[in-house]
Length: 431
Image (cartoon, rainbow, N blue to C red; front, side):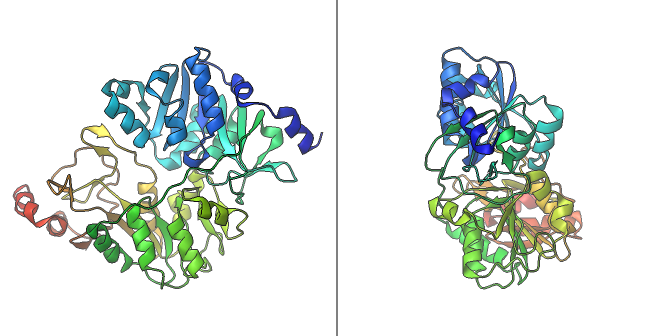
């Protein structure tokens, strides 16, 4: 039977497709922009009707489609979130009803460990995700979300794809064949769009310090948010840059457009920008579609410190919530609650440390809550996301400090210098 015939045989409505999802089982949800809106709406209808119970949904970085369907407060219980990275969806749920926190199970796990978790630690029953249209050979592209999604799709007993023409086709190592798919649902819908927010003066200053650490030939990893975008704007005059990043963004794409990124000096996948997931806007997704300069891989490969470190001059830029006076960072816990997760921060810190002439940057504004709280603290309020042994550069609007090779006393002095001046005496007394 040819691919087109298999496709036709497995094509059905979203309501029919989610009937294949079993109560009491483990389901993996496509990440971020790969959330399948039609399938999620149909699954929510099943939960509302009492037709599915005790469904454990595994995911990272939920977005609006999940938030308006299966992650609504009245669906929790029938739907049991197994969240590996908290987003604004979960935070809003808990803010509206603190009792919802007990119904959201946060699972500590590095982003790079999520494929192994789904593949080896669970008997994964089903996976639902958005894919690009099938090609002439019967393959779907994972588009903007290879990450753990591709691994889940290859190991789940039941795979249900939502085919969306808006999903860009991106080359990857292990595309999904129609023969591996249990059900196909077609849905033409705009992909979720993410734009930059307004920059603060502090962020612009921090970006300037970071840009000074980026030389010609650097291989870039940029985290999420306005700060990495500002850094990208400031390094557009660099030459022969490369990209090996967890997250691909329009700001990194801008460096490709400008010619600053060529990827020629990379040891891994030379000539191509490597990523594991992407978030942007509609022009960005169009640019990705069929772009031979892009290559996506599962997150356990992209975020492997050994793989990252094969490239020279890696520059890794990530944000944090708190830095203690020894250099340890809490990047995931705020106001007594889990705020996000460890993600891939430590993976890229260690990958940059393993890279010849590599630079790892952890950045934050020196204060929070309108300047009333210092982010440089004597002791962290939450877990250690990045240990002091691994931290290289710390940057705030008050400067940049290289902690490598520094004693505890030297680190404390440098970090106090990065704090807001009104907190420096208090921090010095805490030593």
